[in-house]
Image 1 (spheres, one colour):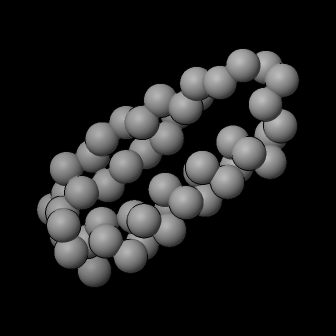
Image 2 (cartoon, one colour):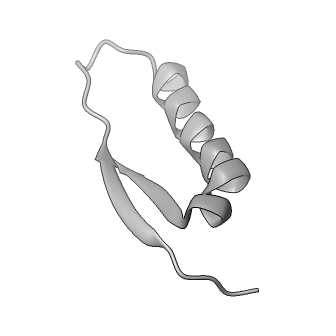
Image 3 (spheres, helix red, strand yellow):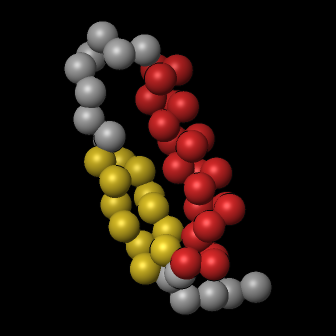
Length: 49
């Protein structure tokens, strides 16, 4: 089902010695937020590196 949404880009920036698992945790958390609240609030957050 389609819905209107404002899309925001969120830059994930960190030093090279940060484990990939930590960056993936941030991405999963944002994805879960989008699923739980995005449609209701009309807001989608897209991560970028």
